[in-house]
Image (cartoon, rainbow, N blue to C red; front, side, top):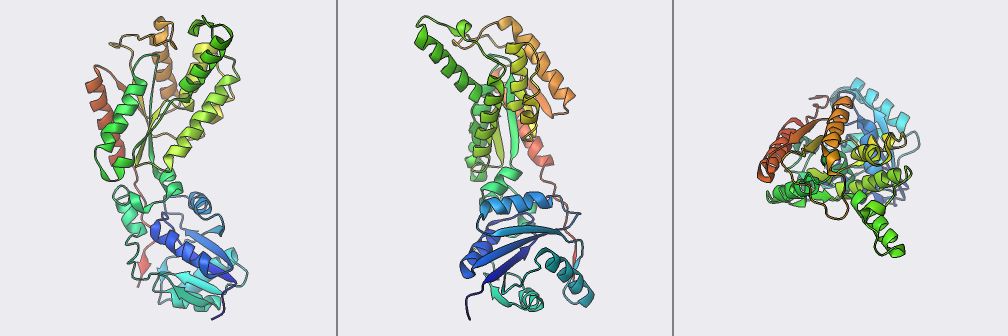
Amino acid sequence: MNRPEHGLVLGKFYPPHAGHHHLIRTAEAGCDRLTVLVCCATVESIPLGERVAWLREAHPNARVVGAVDDVHMDLEDEAVWSAHMAIFKAAVPERVDAVFTSERYGEELARRFGAVHIAVDQARERFPVSGTAVRADPVGNWHHLEGPVRAGLVLRVVALGAESTGTTTIAEALAARLRERGGAWALTQCVGEYGRTFSEERLRAVQAEHSTATWNDVRFTTEDFPVIAKRQNEREAAAAGVGGPVLCCDTDAFATTIWHERYMGGRNPELDPLADAIGHDLYLLTDHEGVAFDDDGLRSEAHLRPWMTGRFEEELRRTGRDYVTLRGPHHARLRRAEEAVDDLVARSWRFADPLPERH
């Protein structure tokens, strides 16, 4: 058989997993150019656009397109086949030379495209996984997910609070506790606070000019805060694709909006879209009560901590973000944080069933 010029891979990718990626990469190697068609029913709970974006990121050399397909599957019904093919050919109108599948209906699908069928690991021996299995147990099948899908499904937990209330301590301790669980949890990442890095660099720059300068000599501008928020988002995006089912974050761009109030005395509207650019699933608000103020050289004005705690809580409520407040000694806070994460996991990843397949 001559090498196919145009190949096609078709599926729901609900969600994409290792078997899908193997199929696509095999197809890429087996034809001159490849189209991947993502078919999504409106009853399904992962939007079509997200699946297309994940596959485009994972397979930049393939053309990935999407189509809404609300027709149930019935391999014995000619009318059903015709309805599906109308959707497929509207999305991929050009000639298809080869159809690559791991499905039992692959031969018939290829025949209706006027193409050859190339079967790839139909027994699922190389990657024993399915979309059904991933939807039923994302954590147990996390190792079958690639970076873009992990970043899309990961649950993001943010520790935030006033100065010297233990946000870094709780974020790092929670990540360590989750890693101890092993399996996919061993990959748990903790995203550090870029604002602190920025502040340290700003202090060093001031001290380079005046060796006796202290934190009280450092000045910020309103333009600094979008820079901090963008870098925080970038750090989080980098960690999301390589970590486990939960991503622990020491602050986020939303918290930066409050820090702008703290240092600049008001809001900066440029921060709002950055605060909403990444969805976060749970916030851990560290209360200031019972925590001694530790001046580590980058802190001042301990009397503002009650105000900041209050502003964080007001904005969390106003924006409808899910949060719990951590109080008491560290061990109690860590226990409460872990309980909140377990509750989050238990109520998340509720995938709607796809359309039934009729036989």
